[in-house]
Length: 175
Ligand code: IMP
Image 1: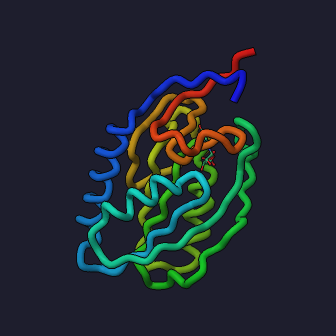
Image 2: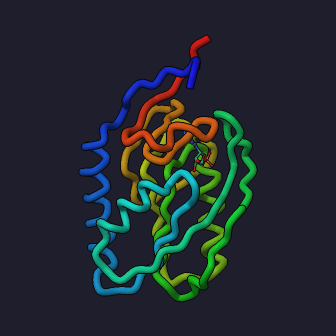
Image 3: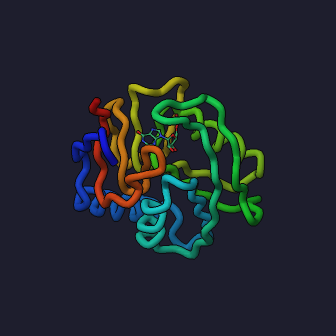
């Protein structure tokens, strides 16, 4: 993509090590119990695929699709494009996000999922930008806290591109 500069922020190796550790943390919490792991599309698809393989307990996979962004800023409005395909009532649930920026999407998802009465809900995000939060948002497990810059790679996009980068990079426009 032209007029875009990428600066590597988190390497493939750092991601692999941290995601493995996050899987172990989730395993410690739910070992021997049934689990529903919900991936939030599209941004979490690579993180989700690596994370579920690092979790050692019986689990089912499901996905939700939400959108809240246009270009590089949050619209503040969360829309569900794809909802759960099976009930999570009375189940242990882990929801997997790519990044918590303003916190609006994660807070919306928590409210939405809690309305389905799970036994337990754990929120997980690969990345979090603490300085960008617009409302209080407590996430149970965060991979990396990062500065308030726009990032791409490992599932995250800019205008639909860069999801296939195996590492995370900061992106800036050059004109
Ligand atoms: P929030 O509702 O503002 O916390 O935004 C959450 C969603 O915005 C994430 O799931 C991402 O899809 C998108 N997003 C936020 N920050 C970035 C970024 O730096 N790069 C790519 N997508 C982002």
